[in-house]
Figure 1: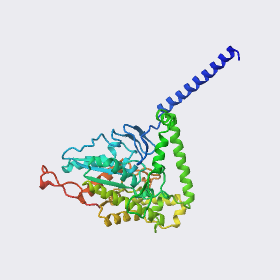
Figure 2: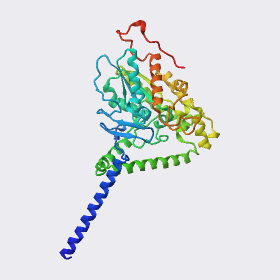
Figure 3: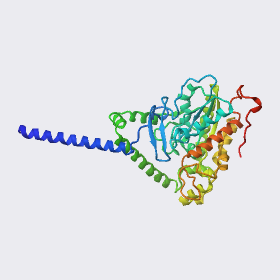
Figure 4: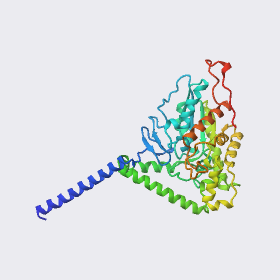
Amino acid sequence: MPTSKRTLLIFKFVTLGVSLLLAFLCIEILVRVSGNDRPLAWRPDPQRGWRQIPGAKLRWTEEGDGLVEINALGLRDRERTIAKKPGTYRIAVFGDSMTEAVQVNLEQTYTQLLEKRLPDHGWNVEVINFGVSGYSPLQGYLTFEIAGKAFQPDLVLHAVFTDNDIADCVRSLAAGQVGAPFVVDDESSVLDIDYSGAIASSQEYDRQPLYTIRRWSATYRMLGSVLRRRRGVEGFQATLESTGGVPKRHLVYLNPAASDWNTAWRVYEHIMVAFAADARSIGSKFAVISVPAGQVVDPQVWSRVVSDFPAMASKRWDLLAPDERLRQLGAAHGIPVLDPLSFFKSRAQGAPMFFGGQDSTSQNGLGHMTPRGHEVMAEALENLLLSEELLPVQRNQIDPGSRPSRPGID
């Protein structure tokens, strides 16, 4: 090939490469300035399935509107120190997305609101949020083992959202738990855990060059987010077909419970007992929080659900059964269960407590807690912690005659 033709061909390839690079850079800039970037806030973890990325920051608008900032210790919380200051009563809260609460700003979360309320009683209290979106009860327990113990909490609270947490205890019922660890043998009292999915997910995430592309490219992150949402919709439709038109998450309310759900409850019981024993072994008190769901608080929400999925009309449902079963397990093992449901019901009037309202007769929905929902949760937990005597004895500087009464729950 003549030199002039070769030079022209090289020039064309270089021009094409530069043009593609400029086009990609324009798309990158457009994605970032338009607010469509999905900064990384969570990453796979070989032990817990996934965890938060220290220093990550993003705006969550898929539901609610929350500024999410992960602190230096990898928690969705204000900056903390692992070492506990003398005279501090430290409460550590473990849970899933209802506790991490990316739908609202940090200062609106129930953990932060509870921390602000308790000093009114004369205590120096820290309420640390170890919640991570999507976590199963097992992942909450493993987080305590791996990270929580070092904080030397005086009280460990495990916030359980029975609406989906019980299902997430077993692989066959779990939804969206790709890469999570699971308990292998539900019959054994010793937790035999399969970490293979978590290990494989973590290794795949770190593989080059995708790791670097994912880290630096807003376009890649945006397309990945779109693809995950699409897969979620397709997965829901596929599951709906397999269950005869009933959303799998609602089968926890089926009366009587199916055998696979009894297996899930048995696995959860093993996790709860192990969690309580390990917390107590370091001198911590332990209690479970039964986080309420919108359709349990507001019957109109459940009516909408049954209307949306006609196959549910022919079955028997008991919306209070999961809460009751959780209380029975707690009583059987001497574990306090803090149940704010009646408190939520007594606050039914007013602004919605859950996202996802669809009509004018009931503004509550099936989603996560709104800012008002977090306020109600913090108020309920304050009352429940007092009534269950899970807070320290009143400090000496408080006049015994002015000791606050322990209000009950309606």
